[in-house]
Length: 138
Image 1: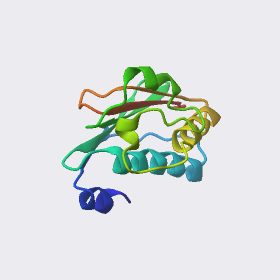
Image 2: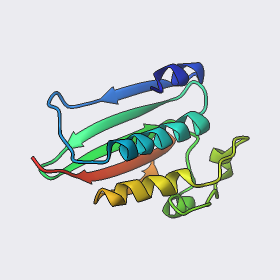
Image 3: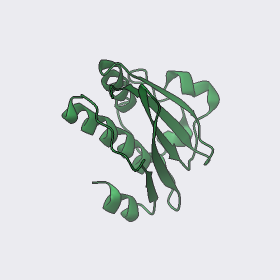
Image 4: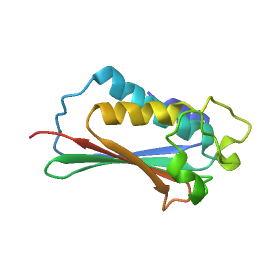
C-alpha cells in the first residue's frame, strides 16, 4: 500500500518477515490503521534518500514489530511524550509538515486495546525506532 508512495518520496522500504506465518486475533481494520499511521509518519518525517525497515520478530507469546527509520531523529527528551495526544515537541520531525499530534496517540490506543505495548527509541539507522509488542496464542 505504501511502497509506491515511499518511492515517490525518495525513500526505500524493507520488510523482514519470518518464513512461518503467525496468526493474531485482532481487529484487522484497527491494525491496518495502526500500520497506516506509522507509515504515514515515516513518509512525512523521513528525509528523502532515507528509508524504513520493518521487521517481525516472534517469541513464544509476543510478536515484536520494529519500525526503524533513517531520520531525522527525535531528541531523547521528547521520546517519552511521543504517544501523548497533541504532543509535537520536536521541530526536527515536524519540519514544514503538520498534523494534529494525534497519529501516535491513536497508535498507542490501538496497540493497548490489543493487549500490547508501543515504545520509541533512537533508531540505529539515525531516525526513530518504534517497537510494538503484541501478544498472541499459538
